[in-house]
Length: 108
Image 1 (tube, rainbow, N blue to C red):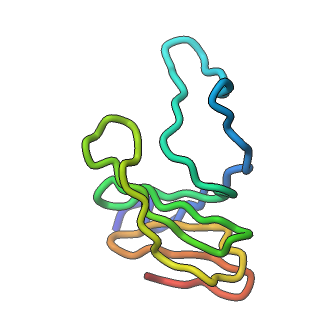
Image 2 (image 1 turned 180 degrees about the vertical axis):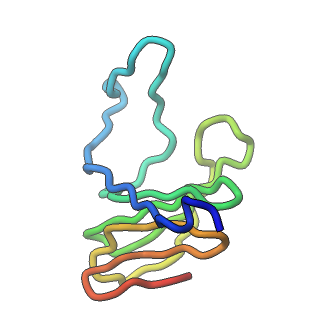
């Protein structure tokens, strides 16, 4: 079992609004681009096939974002779960997606 699976790292992002004319700046030799627009995006995890899982705390949803043509933008947004009690932390271990809510830890 990999170290990542043992640790089940959870990345929490501070939600912010990205306006078309504004993106955060990056150090030299790095760039910032908009990958997908998900209102109230809170946490993310990378799946085994490269999909990005994103939770939305207030909306109570988890989305899977797919960059099918590998151009750096998500072409598809797939609803994975809804009606969750404020999902905040998410992690992927093997083929399982773990979602932490105010009441429970769920495995998909």
